[in-house]
Amino acid sequence: MRKDEDRARPNYRKNSITLTGAVAMGTGVMIGAGIFALTGQVAELAGKWFPFAFLAASVVASFSAYSYVKMVNANPSAGGIAMILKGVYGRTVTTAGMSLLMYFSMVINESLVARTFGTYTMQLFNGSGQGYMIPVLGVALIVFAFLINLIGNRAVQNMSFVTAFIKIAGIAFLALGGLWASGLDVSGISVVPSQAGVWSIPGSIALALLGYKGFTTITNSGSEIQKPHESVGRAIVISIAVCFLLYMLITVAVGSNLSVEEIVAARDYSLAEAARPAFGDTGVWITVVFAIVACVSGIIASIFAVSRMLAMLTEMKLVPHSHFGMPGDIQKHTMVYTAVLAILSTVFLDLGRIAAMGAIFYIIMDIAIHWGVYRHARQKVGARGGVLITAMVMDAVILLALLKIKVDTDVFIVYTSLGFIALLFLGEWLFLKRKG
Image (cartoon, rainbow, N blue to C red):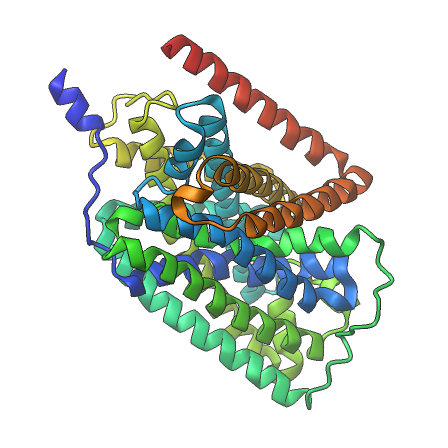
C-alpha cells in the first residue's frame, strides 16, 4: 500500500524553474496558439478592427491575471489553478469541475497549436495534401512534445528558453520587415466603426483572448519556480506584456500587407501569406519555420504545465485515476492522458471549432476564479473587489457574444460545449458523492 502511494505521488522539484524559464514557458504557450492560429479567425469577426481585438484581449487578460497573481503569490503550488479553486471553494464539485474545465481548455489549446503546426508546415509544399496531412503532422508534434516532457523539467525549461528567444526575435523581424516593405500603409486597419455585427467585436475578443490565456500555465508550476511568492506574479506580468507588444506589431504588419478579405481567405495560415508581399516565397518559408518553432515550444510547455495540474487534482482526490498498468509516477500518467486527449481533438476538430470550444471552457472557468476570490478570499489576499468585478463583467460580455455568434453560425459546437460541461459536472458530482 505504501509503495502504491509513493508511486502515485507527484514528484515536484522545488526551485527547478527560474523566472526566465517561467516566462519562456508562458510566452511559449501564448505565442504558439495566439498569433499564428488566431489572426485570421479574429479578422473574420472583427474586420479591419482585428488588431484592436488583440489590444482589448490584452486588457481582459490583464484584469484576469489579477486574481491569479494575488492567489498564487499568497500560496504558490504545482497545482496552480486547482489549488486556487480549492482555496476559494474547498473540496467541492465546483473546484473539481472548473479545474477540469481549465484542463480540457488547455488540452484543446494543444490541438489548436498542433493543427496550426500542420497547416503551416504544409505551406512548404504549397498546401498539398492538407486534408489528411494536417492532423497527421499535428499528432506527430504532440508525440514529440510528450517524449521531450518525459526527460524532465530542465529539458523543458532549456528548450522553452531557446525557442522563445528564436520565435520572438524572428516574428519581430518579419513584422518590422513587413511594415518597412509596405511603406507603413495600414489601410487594412481602421478605427472607423466596423460594419461587423454588434456581437462580432466582443466575440472576436473572446477568440483573441486565447492568445493570452497561456499565462495560466505559469501558475501550474508555482512551487517549482525559484522564489515563487515573487516570481510567479512577475512571470505572468512579463509574459502578457511581451505577447501584447508582439501581437500588436504583427497584426499591424499583417494589416499593412493584406486586405481583410485576403486574411480571412488564408485564415489558418495568414501570417505566411502576409510575408509574401514583402519577402516573396522566401518570406513564406521563414515565417513557416518560425511558426513551427513556436508551435513546438507551445506544445512542450503546455503538456509540461497541464499534466501537472491534473496530477495535483489526482493527489487531491478530486478526479478518478488509474495506472492502467503503466510504470512510473502520476506525472508520467497524466502526461499520457493529456497527449492522448490532445491527439483525439487534433484528429476530429478543425481550427475554428477548437478555438471556440477552448474559449468557452476557459472563460467560464475564469469567471468562477474571479467570483470565488471575490466571495471568499479577497480580504485574505488583499485583492480589490472592483478589479474582480470588472474582470467578471468583461468575461461575461465576450462569452455571451461568442455564444451568440456560434448559435447563428455553428450551433453544433455550442451544444457540444455545453453538453460536455454538463456531463463533466455530473460525473464529478457522482465521483465525489461516492468518495464521501
